Length: 391
Image 1 (cartoon, rainbow, N blue to C red):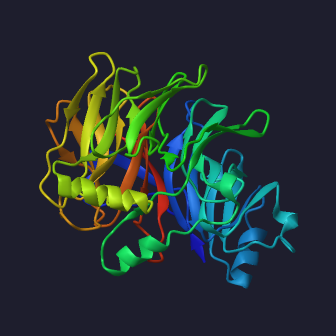
Image 2 (cartoon, helix red, strand yellow):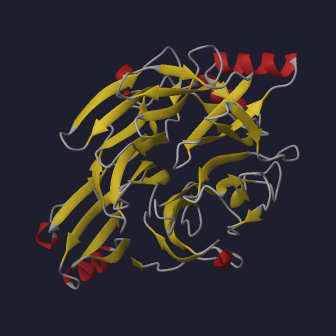
C-alpha cells in the first residue's frame, strides 16, 4: 500500500494556503517548529513509529513492501527518495535498500525528534521520560521540557483519569524541567528547574527565552537570560498564563491565558494545580509590550471558547492561532488569524477536526501546523506544511 499525498486542502483554505504536504504518517505528532534557517523541524511524537530510510532504488523497495503488505510513504528528496515504513522496527532483509536509515521507536509518552522539511526523521533528542515544548533557540541549540531527570519512565497522574471519566477535560502538569540540547557536540544540559511545572519555553528573542512556571504557586510567565541565567517574572494574574512567543523584533510577547475573576474560580484553580492539573477552558490571547510593560487582550470570545498556540507573522501585523470559536465547547479546533489590535479576525482552516500549533517560517512563505486531517486512526495527529499565500 502506498501513501503519497501532495495536497490535502478543504474548501475555503485556498485563500491562505496551498501545496499542503503531510510530513508524518503515524502516531501522535505535534508542536512542530522550524529552525531559523528553515531546513530542520523539531517536534514531539508518541505512539506508533517506524522505519525511515533513503535510497536511490525505487523499484525493489516498493515491490518488497507490497509483498510484505507494509504501509509506506514515499517522497522525492534531493537526489534520492525517502521512505517511511509505519510500524516496522526490524531492518533485517532491508539493509540492501538503505543509503541512510533511522528507526523511530514506539513510545508511550512524547519524545523530541528532528526531521528535515521532506519529513525524514533523523535524530532523537530526548533520552526518556515525558517531553514537550521543543524549540530551536538557534540552528544549533534546542530547548525543551522533560521529566527524565526524575526517571526515564513515563510519569503518571492518577487524578487526571478521575476528571476525564467525569467528562472534565484537564491538562496534566508534570514535574518538567527545562533542558537545552546542543546539536554541534551532541550534549544535553539542564537549564532551569524548580519544584513543579517548568515548560512551554517555545519562543525566544536572541538570548532571552520566555516560559511558564508554577514556581511561585501559580502558572505565570517568566523570561530567562541564557547568558546571565537571570529570571524575571512578567505576569501576575491569578490563573493560567502560557504558550508564549516573542515577536520577531522582540517588542512583543503573545500568549494564551485564563485569568480568574472571583474567589471560587481561584480556589478551584489552586486545588487542581495542587494535583498537577489545569482546565484549559475560556482561554484568551494576550499581547505583552516589552517596551511599555503593558498587556492587551486580543480576543474576546464567548463562553466555551479556547484560543491557544498563538504565533506572530514575520511582519508583526497579525497573529495566527488555534480556536474552537466556530463551535464553542467542542474539540473542533481550526486556525484563525487576527491583527495585533484585535481586529480583522479571519478563519484559515476548515477541516472540521483538529488544527493547532501553527508557525511561520522566518521569511513568512511557509506555514507548519498539527492536524488530524487524513488521519487513519482516532488518535492520529500529523504535521503538515504549506505555502502561505495570505496577506
